[in-house]
Length: 224
Image 1 (cartoon, rainbow, N blue to C red):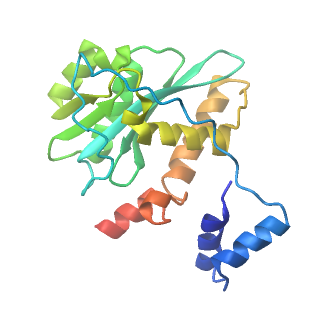
Image 2: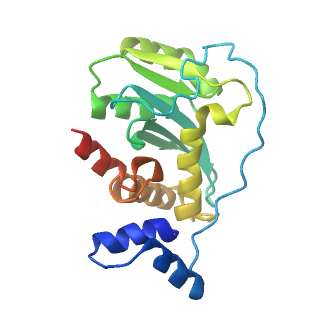
């Protein structure tokens, strides 16, 4: 699933002496290609949020951990029915700091993901938490939880996926690199595979272009 730039970084880390152009040439000769992403969503201008204003304003680069998180929901296909996944991503390191998987779109799905993020990170200062305008993020449970844990809600404009582009990008990577349009036999099988992708590969190993070619965990360790 890696293209030439990330393959080059892996080779260099392994001690191989080579250049980016050579890696690209050899990959082309041997027909080795990175997996293509899904079609980009259509841009819609969007209307301002009615419930909560967009406080993030697409400021996706922040100066420190736990200053701003983004969260969103996606769905996975299984032969037992849908499995819904909610994640919370720290904009500083692009690390998935909270996640939850359930068979329904109950509001507890998003609250549990946020609870994991709060429990893991234990932020000292107020954190901006940005989401879309899904009903789960407009629920009383969500707003009460944010108020109780010093979190500041923010919402995308209605119908504008680019206002939450970092969360969308994570889901695109998950589906391109791991799920690959697969239909899992059971929800438990899907949960195990997603857990492995997030906790074993994405956070600890996967090279991220935005982070200069290192993993979210390595980026956070280097910034301490």
